[in-house]
Image 1: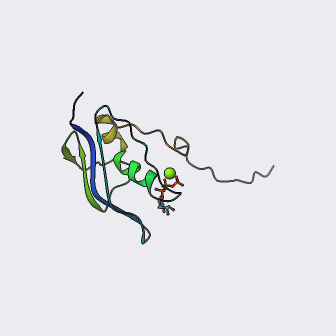
Image 2: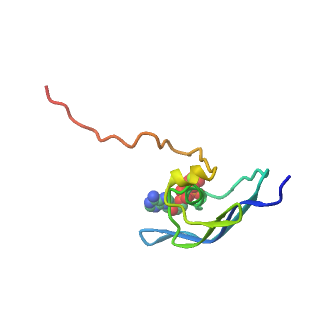
Length: 103
Ligand SMILES: Nc1ncnc2c1ncn2[C@@H]1O[C@H](COP(=O)(O)OP(=O)(O)OP(=O)(O)O)[C@@H](O)[C@H]1O
Ligand SMILES: [Mg+2]
């Protein structure tokens, strides 16, 4: 089994409207490893994985894929690098507005 890092996040930070969701977060997974990311509601688990999946851009820190530094422009770029994500909430259909239909 390879000991090469598959994913490495180093010193990652992410803020939403002034609220610090991630502060100096580190995470490393080697090829062949399975990890469980545990934390209370709102701890930042999804935010961290959304950064790996290219959905959120981090304000600080670095992301390495296969030990190469990357700056993902979006989820398609992440997919090309072999990163897929099973989302906690449905993402395929955006929220619908409630429209009143008059007949
Ligand atoms: N798109 C967003 N806009 C504003 N705030 C956000 C957004 N995404 C996450 N947050 C906030 O960032 C913090 C971390 O949220 P995140 O969803 O990453 O946590 P989590 O660990 O996945 O929580 P849960 O266990 O509930 O899934 C929370 O306070 C959340 O409200
Ligand atoms: Mg979550």
